[in-house]
Length: 420
Image (cartoon, one colour):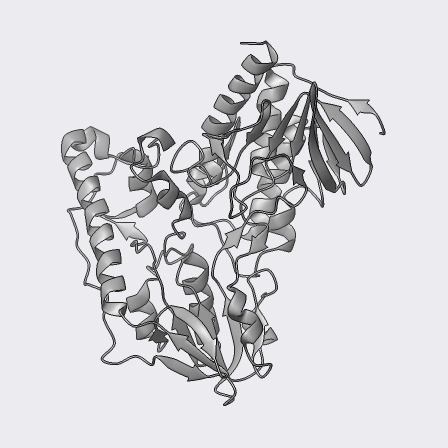
């Protein structure tokens, strides 16, 4: 395909890239979707075995496709998510080319030159839909960890049985961290969880999934240009949620009840020892306060909406307002751990993810390697992005949030092509 020309190149065939393709096709804009692996590749290859979506099945929707299975209140497994996205790719007729690795995107006089493992493509516009979770974000001091402790990231972790016997240190208390800490603890291993800033949420509130409230109250639909501190909002960790059949709340209190030991944020490694910050009480108080404020927002909305607005799909009324016990602060926490003692046999870094733009040879990245953009419109003419945190709305990274973002971005792209 050397010298090939198309109007638009979409990079990534996950739910974001396929949604872009859906709207490009609707506007008769010729395009290709390039995917380094297979459709929904990250769901196939880069998730642990027990992972389920955080959103209930009834919220799983893509342009023209909704969940139609027998368990609307359940949570999809990785295999089910893969099938859901695969079906969307087939039904929408997306022009996907799998096994094509993008190695460079450069600006040219009339658009962009996209260099791939299968040749070169010239195009006027590019949509980056390669995701926000291409690489684990691990602190640099990981290299100072003694070799006695095996180190893994969520990309390499599959199940507790692959870990050596003995203690496990899970670093990070977002959705990934609390889920892995719980799963590993259930396997019988001693687990220590290093806790930093986190977002606490109950799985259900007033008898409904908490994400029903996020959607119904309009919190999820808040636009990026309405958020007070957008930079901070885009860097917030994912909320402490797990998609289990029991719809259980998996917060710090649940973990301590399981016997997970808590320590503060891992700050450094010195002489083979992990050093942790203090101040867990303040960290917990802040997370509790933010949760209370969000629940207040739900209650205020419910009061204004009235019985009809509060009704769910079956017409049932929501329960009364609830409040939850504060996060329990341990009587004492360790400020250091000797990583050479054999107490900790493995470390799981659940410290977040970052995108990989090493192939992007356009000056649109900030000092931390993040894409500079205004609601998905990057700082280079004809360059767009989809699927990043709070891209155009608070729900942008969720499957149910991509349709509105993709429609608006492709509208903008079409206007750009038309010279408007």
